[in-house]
Image (cartoon, rainbow, N blue to C red):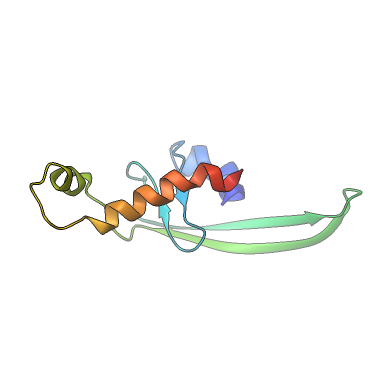
Length: 103
């Protein structure tokens, strides 16, 4: 994901810093300018001397799966709803873990 954002972050993601759960989940704070897009990413592994050890190419598909509504969390916290908004809680969990997991 780091390579994807370095290469296409400003042009295709409007500078958004998405949170990635390490599997299939990819969350942004706002809408992206597309609903579905494929990206080709090349990863280059180098040895200690800097020589190319191996090149791998990946196709990364980003598509809108759903939109989480933060108002459900607000209603739950204000005791206006009895059902915990599990989808919002999952998104918040991924976002809060993003920075520590990189370090």
